[in-house]
Length: 200
Image (cartoon, rainbow, N blue to C red; front, side, top):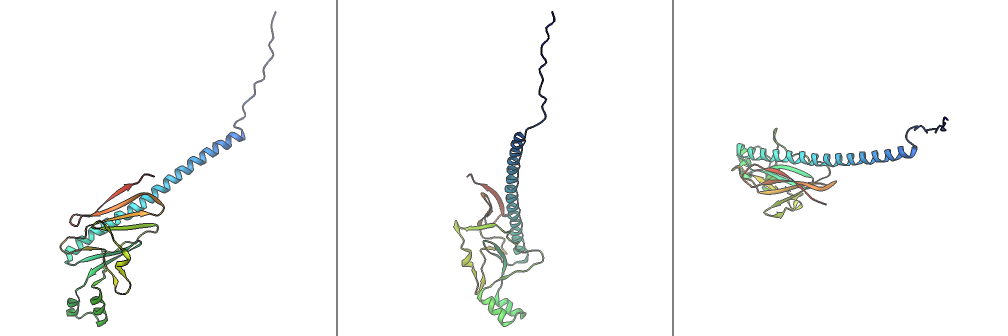
């Protein structure tokens, strides 16, 4: 006797349900947002690092320029601006006879005057970056050096003797407090930088 078993109809899978698709899309969106956040953080750090590298290069050029041209250079700064200066001897300038009485009077008030050079300058501070300067383990008060009446005074000096002000300049970014770049100068050797990371 032959036994005939009833055929079981198998339900064919027709793909993902709407709920499954939504779950997958949420997961993908979360992963993409993490990737974008990491890329944004890396971009901020890279931008800050490039600015720190530019400052290192410029400061080492200031040292060379001061020694080569036998002059004293200064760098005035606040939290978002840098100004390159040179020390002017008012008596020497008067003997040259190229400056007016008013210009000589300005130099007499403040011998640190803006320095212009085809090869040197003070880089612009990118938006969002912050700078704090320490000399002799004390933070420099930028506002005290930027006197509007007599003009800016240098926070750092690069002398013709190849010596310069020993310092630590910390550069951070408002958008990310997990790192800073610190530029070091010991007063004799080339300026260098390091990356400092903080745990939150």
